[in-house]
Length: 151
Image 1 (cartoon, rainbow, N blue to C red):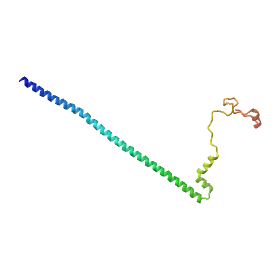
Image 2: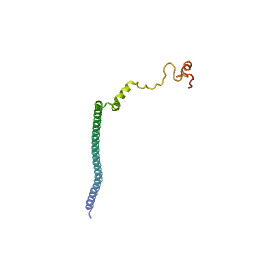
Image 3: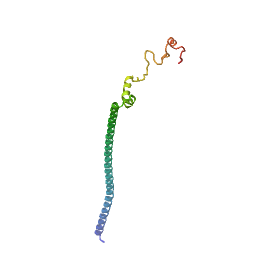
Image 4: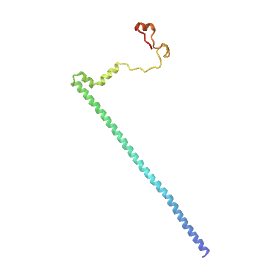
């Protein structure tokens, strides 16, 4: 064989080896790209499902809120109708009181003073740590009660 033939055979072998290595590298790199594309596609699908679930949940809560409002309105209308019917038709005072508990409760609350907040100080010049705080003088106690009280 001739030296020039060996050079040509070596060049062709290197060329084929380069094509093989290039195809193998492209296959390995393309496999990662295909895998990444599948992951991106699944991510897009799950985001779409999530947005659909959020929209359905918002619709559900909106409808539930509307239904609750409707039930409250109907309950209030029924209560008004019952109280108006009771005012027109019922002569028994006790039954009217049972049908109108809110009105009586409101008048009772208006008549009484609301409870005061507890304080951490005493009235007057003496403090709560004084020895005679809250005790009446002896001469007033003796006149009011026969037996002295012990604290």
